[in-house]
Structure formats: structure tokens, C-alpha cells
Length: 246
Image (tube, rainbow, N blue to C red; front, top):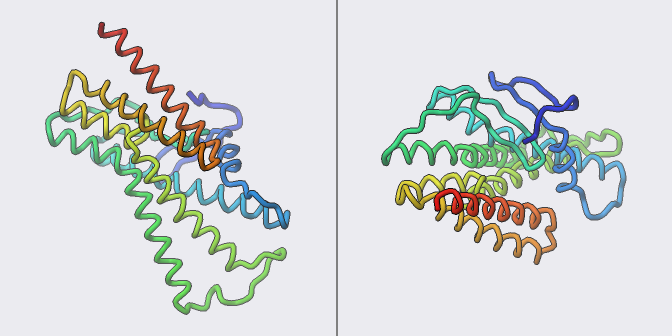
């Protein structure tokens, strides 16, 4: 999935290889596209601010997973941005721990991404409160190409906070392969090693269908399609497992 292309952006950050598939930019831009176009200059600036905020938010989210791989499991990993967000991929399979403490380790690995995003959101909220509390650095009426610098900063901070919180909550839903689905799978497998994965897939599929319907009702077609795709993926895996273990 998401094989390297000649148009990928590759770099390293904090020692982690980062690869950005071109679909990431396209899908994120489509999600953040304003519904009304009143000013073309501001229209493109808003999209750019949204894409930049999404990149920062998702990068911090994936760094949460990558740092756990590095410091807890001692496994190197890379971060890949793709059309459905991002993922952290270890270069070698990490050695899973078993028992109750092993469950806690696996839950922490999956929850580290959303937690990192919530910390980022809190950090930017503090910055916003600091700016509004009377500091003068941004109070000057600085205008560049007809756009107020203070308003640009405010929009960027709002986007980072909104995306970090939403992305974290979204990922904690018990839908596989998102973080919440991984947590659900580990928990059900701990309770019932034989049927745990199947039970987590059933919960994942039902939850994905419910949220697909809900998103469709609110006119969020891209989100509805994403949940429907997750439901189909889970149905396929559940069917395969049922056939395999007959």
C-alpha cells in the first residue's frame, strides 16, 4: 500500500525517516476546502494554512507512536503520510509482551498518537491565550499581500487545535485499523485469545457502519466513504478468518 513514487517528499525528523505520498496533499486539501469563495487570495491562504496545520498535527500524532517504538520496544520505524492520514511503520516486527502488562504496553503504543495530539493542542491553546492576554508582538497591524498576519496566525492555531483534537478522538474510535481498533483488538484478544480478533472486527464493522450513516446524514461524504471503506475492510477480514478457521 502506498508504494514509493517519484513525487514523494522524503526527509528525516528527530532521526525518523519521513515519506509523504502525493495523495496526502490532495486529500487533505479537499477536506479543508472552504465552501464559499469570497476572496481568491484568502481562499488559497486558508487551504495552505489548513494543509500546514494538518501536516503538523498528523506528524506529532505519528511521532507519538514512533517514540514508543524507539524508547519502549527499541525498534526503529518510519512515518508515512498517505491519502488517509499517516502511519508509523516499524522496520522490524516489535516483540510483543504478553499478560496484563503486555496488554498495557500495546494499549500505550496505540494511544500514544492521540495523546501526543492532545498535548500539541494544549500547547497551542496556551500560545493562543498568551497572545490574547496582552502581549504586543502580534498587535501591530502588519499586512502582507492584503492579509493580516495576526489573523493568519489565529487561523493556523485554530486549525492545529481542531485537527489535533478531532484526529485524536477519531483515531480512538474502536474501528480497525485505527488506533482505537488496535486497542479494541488487543483488549478482546486478552479476554478471549480464540475469538478476540473476530469480536473486535464485529465491533469495528458495526461502529464504522453507524458512523458512515451519521456522516452521510450530515453531508460529510468523504468521511462517510472512509467509514464505509473501513466497514468493508473489516467485513473482508472477518470473512477470511471465518473461512480460514472452519
